[in-house]
View (tube, rainbow, N blue to C red):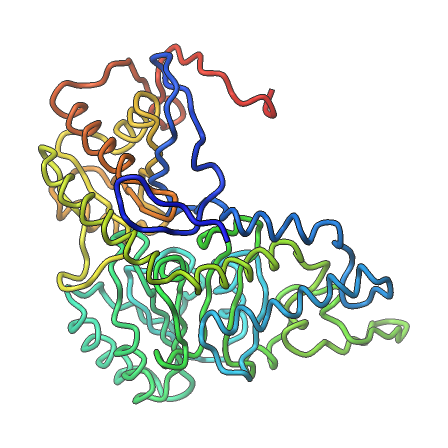
Length: 443
């Protein structure tokens, strides 16, 4: 077991690969990288890397291979379903379909709903949850101002929805603000109206335990790259009936149980779920990594939550000392995971992100975070004419020094200006005369 005591805190958390990574600055120095962009993609856990290294010598084809290595890989792949099912507290009868990421999972679900299903979702959703659901049967509810208002708004929307199958889409934690949505309360409303509910857990899964049965949700989707397993796997867990009646998401080997030649046409018998929606050679390594990350996080929730909340408090308190700082918020009364998006009056978000990286070795996100509708609205409410913000996000690799460096750097940039010259290139701010060398493997 690999644990790390985070400098500046008293919490032991699972260690990540790259914690000691040093990056060059435009000023000539090198500093330890301050990764405050976990909400986009989290680094790999050291234990996940070890699990992948352990599997690689045995890696082979799955499901139809007679060789011993194939049998091992098949066992690894299929056992991962149970490991993921336990991680989200799903029913034993729930399907576990492996995908590429949360976006892939939610698009699969959108392809599988019954015809004329009424879909209700808040317009504050990430694009992965917002865009697959369009058309006359989709009702987008304006983002509420509080958790209670969200419950009331969903109740009204479902009461007005057409008779027939219904589906609610909701995020567990906002990727823009980090706010925790009242999933259990929303699920109760959905059940009262005979609707199913799908949980976008991409931003929730790395930060809080999930129990689908206790929450009352029917589907859970999340990505490996958000939970410290960046090997290209995601998952959709949930009720199998809609998935079973749907045409395969992709067609090809694995999705078929038998193909016959009838001269002018091919006869196809599709596989049952989950293979029905997993055509092609599966990502065995990515799935194994995802399942390993699920088990590692499950063993360390108390430490993980304590670590992130301690640093989140430090971050928010420090950012409030930066002149012109305004934090974006949707739900006034919600708890948060380690995500803070903000604007600073008079400063372009892209410029701030570029200067933080080039001069201070800090990685943050700038833009609209694939949630253009809600970010545009919140930024305007914050008094900015732009439709972009800066997002700092905390994870297991974050230290108190990283947080303090960000706060000090922002104060310096706002009060004294940058040390370097910057210009826009292809819509992005970049440092002028940047002679930093890339790592050798890119040479």
